[in-house]
Length: 255
Image 1 (cartoon, rainbow, N blue to C red):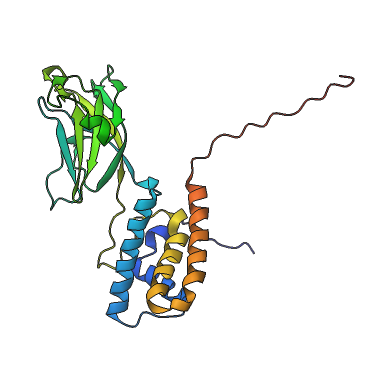
Image 2: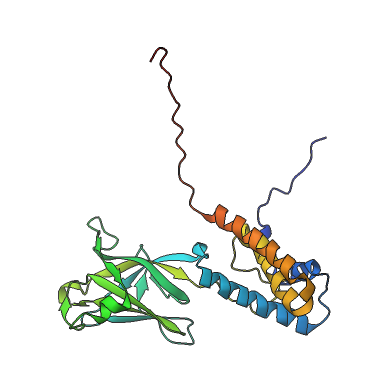
C-alpha cells in the first residue's frame, strides 16, 4: 500500500511564534509556564534578528524600487516605520506607487530615465563613503547625479544624491536594490516569523541559546555550538550557487 504524503510545503509559514518558543524552551529542558517566559522569549527572538542584521546574513530581505528625483532636492529619507515619518516617493518597476519602510541599506543604484517605457535606460551611479561625500566642495550644485551616499540613523536611512538633480533630471528616478530589516515579532504569538524555511532550524537553535543564558546557564556552551552549526549550514545553503562545469581530461595514447 502506497504511503500518502501531505502534498504541502508550508511548515515555515504555519510555524507560529508560540510553537517556536515552545520548541526552544524544550531544548533547554524547560516549559512555558508563565506570561513572563513567553514575553522574555519574544524579546530574545527580536534581539536574535538584530544580531542577524549585524552579521549581514538576511539577504532574503532584498527589495527593489525607483526613487523619484525632485529638482533641487539632494536628500531623501526612508523611515523605520510610518510613525517615524513619511518616506520619499518611490514606484515599482511597473510605475505603481509604494511606501518603503524598514530600509537598512542600499546595495547598488542606477540613474534611470524613461521608466517603464521601451526607451528605459540606466546609467551608473557610484555609492560613495562618508569621506568621499564630505570632500565634495559644493553639495548643492545642480547637474546630472553621479553618486549617492547612504547615511544611516536610528529611525531612518537618508540617501544623499550628488550632484543635486537639475531640471533636466527631475523626470528621472534612482533605481536601487535595498536591504530591509527583518520584521519584528510582536505580541500576536500565532503569527509566523519573517524568516525563510532554510533559516528555521538556526532560528530555533539561536533562541534556545539565548534562553539558556537566562534560564539554564549550564547548557549555554552546548546550545551555542548547536546554533553556530545550524547557522553555518543555513548560510552555506543561502549562497548563490554557480553553475558547475565538468571538463573531461583527455588522454592521447603515445603523447
